[in-house]
Image (tube, rainbow, N blue to C red; front, side, top):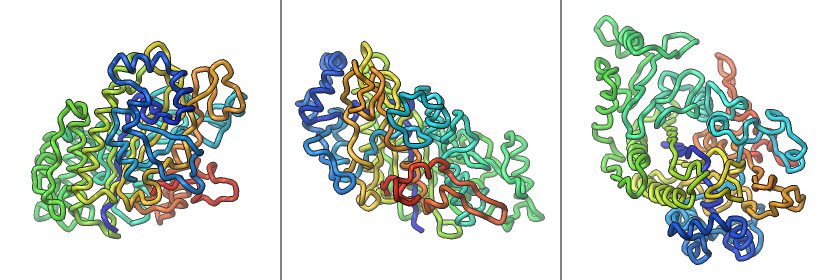
Length: 501
């Protein structure tokens, strides 16, 4: 198996995705502009108008057909501050899943208006940042979970490819903390936004109970005891067989293991092996991409370049999962959205353009599946100078022409719900996906239907991701407990997954 990776940029704060992708055909645009008239006036004053003339350069040309055919005459455009992402969509390097969100089962406006039961009909705390950020990472009904989606996928990969669990942490890198990457036995390799090591690694005791978190002093002592033999270094110990540059660095520099950052710094200062030995991560200007991403994007590309150059483990698996969390100025835009949103959109647009060019330079654009998502959407109608918490949001998937061969340049799952309704009659059954006088869009797709594509990309089947994998030690549970609820009428389990890869 060749190198494959999954990168998840999670934007904290629920960005207004209705200002990322806007209606452009005359009828829908005019109705939407009327609903947002006070906010659009503020955008014009701020020098970032949302007029049709301003949107003309970022009009989208989706290639939806067949089951995903779009309504005749409907058009969309991306924010004027996102020309690079608009071009990437039109070139087939971005897929968009609109109207997606936290769901335990498909729901309807009738169910919502009939006072649904939280946890049974819908997830609880739909408008709470912490609960929905956790849901996006772990699918936890109660907003808390010991493991995350990617961590459970990694547990399944370990079982399927018979990998040593002690190596698994090194295949997950988190920029800041991450439930998303936390597996049953350990957490991810944790870095700061600048790519500096926070948590170097966790080591395992022998036996089925496996990994446990230890304080630095005890962890270091355990490590030395495990590594020591009659000759001082028992290199034949099957607990720790270095398989790659990163592990070799840990092995060689174990005496410096808990000098914070020393091992990681030594690793990133070593030359990248072939075939990516000529790659140099770009230096990004914070004025163009924002402070956090200016540091993080080059570090993400560096991790991908180094890991892709390493030797696969037994079974041919060479994979990497990366989770980047952060917020831009518009992330929770209750106020001053006309000032903050255009700036954050420009930052993101430039950052993603630089990131994708880095993938192309590495030749990894078809090996790395990248998603951008936020926890929930914003209201259709504004408040005095911003938008408030709502429900459905958008997910954006990025990849090369082979990776997104069937989905690039498409709205996966069909056209976005038109963000147009009558606020004086929000219960109108003729507008089936919008409720509340502020305009909450009901998700038509679940987080699980899109996230399952990560497991498919890395080598799992849908059955394995739902039902788990049996091993001699017992069942490794699946990652997506609610996915069977989304099997379409007359379909099979595989049909519940949105066709992104």
